[in-house]
Image (cartoon, rainbow, N blue to C red; front, top):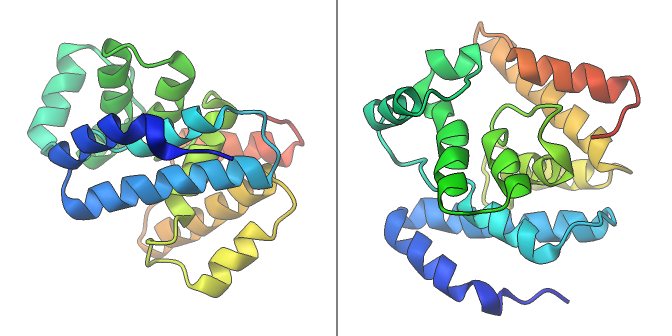
Amino acid sequence: MFSRTGYIALEEELSSLLSEKRFLHSKATALTCVSLAEQYCEPIDPGLCYQAGLVHDIVRQWDAEALVSYAQKWHLDLEEEEREDPVLLHGPVGAHFLRQKGYPEELCLAVRYHTLGSIGMGRLGLVLFIADFIEPGRTHLSEAVRTGLLSLPSLDLLCLQILEMQDAYLASNGKVSARCSKELAHYLLSGKIL
């Protein structure tokens, strides 16, 4: 059974960096990461799952100018959509920021791709991508839809369903999915596993 006890200091640090709403979302995402890994029997350390969920939005409240400046200063490799919509930069900037602080590469990759998804995000990234979308505080999903998603037999199918939902949402707003999101969907549809 997972215990949050070893993460109290990290939670306290994040509560001082994030708004109350963002902090509550981060905690809910962390708990959802642990729950998903357990439900789908993923061989991922629950502590790493919890930590990834907690820190995934560590720079989400930086303004667009700060995110763009950081990405340029460190010459971060960005997706086209991230260059066009600075709010999406919180993934790559957060990952780099956490890497500089000594967080494990597996966690940094998960944070890097938690917004758009990628075939390079690994299993922890898959768990985080899904948890960020379905955590119970998210109001874009009804409880019936959330329950339906969680009844799917694998994380890969769950991810595909989320990608389809995001694609439909973007299309309804005259936008298209990111190249890396499409690549992830194609990869999973072909039966490959991250």
